[in-house]
Length: 369
Image 1 (cartoon, rainbow, N blue to C red):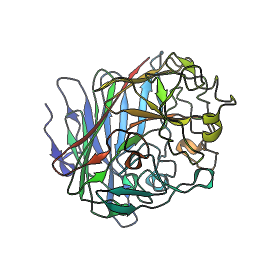
Image 2 (cartoon, rainbow, N blue to C red; image 1 turned 180 degrees about the horizontal axis):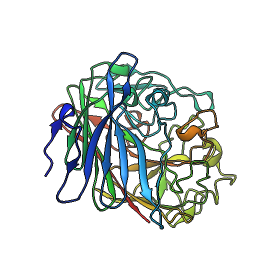
Image 3 (cartoon, rainbow, N blue to C red; image 1 turned 30 degrees about the horizontal axis):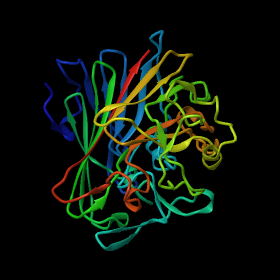
């Protein structure tokens, strides 16, 4: 069994007798202020490798074999720290304190009004997105190697980005021999605060970042979705997916209905909405299958919703790995979460963390081929 150790002691491979997993840490670069960034490489005995940065708690690379055993990277991102410092789409980032949108950047909690940064403007309507101007994806996290993975810690101070309370956050990434890549967030607070920490990878299971994801086959364990206003804020309604292009209860090609004349698709320039996951506890939220490579991905979570985003706003202006300028709909995001704008919707699931409580969010990506 691998015992937890400080980053300074994590330069050698750490073997797990139970899973044949290995974890190594290596220098990745220096931030402009001189602080050092490390990359943690997780590998198992099945040909899978995942690379995690302690900058932004970012999942920087995921190598997954295809049906012929050829491993390819299946996430968008950058090859150098300089690229990650300009990570406008949040590639692979851990996002918080509150991921997704908060209307007008405002909420009232226990009788006190709070104002957050307005850093997103769908349809010209300002809102707060993914924790603000300098959310968790821009922070340098403390790190240590654990069994089969890495543990990352960050203290978000009272008032950071306008949120109340000192929030102590821990994020872990682990990879086991069953090709399960698990991301888990936990947090405690000194004051009541909204919380919605999410993982934000952009996936393309073909392994070709220039290839459209429209042929990927997707199913969502979600009989309802959340309609939005033009500013992409949920209206409060839970609308059935039946009979609409939002219905992924049965496997559908992502691009088969994306061009239909349907209000939600027109407002989001494609798919960019939260679906309400059936059931409770850790359960299946989504399945994806890429026919050309044979790669598959199942996503399990303990959260009430999943945001499916088809990378509609990538526009070839951002150069990523191997110099590829990522185009629209060359990736998809599946962000498990609580409901967007939860602090302003009393009928939505509770998103307030209070002193003495522990927030927990688990995502398990299980890969096959």
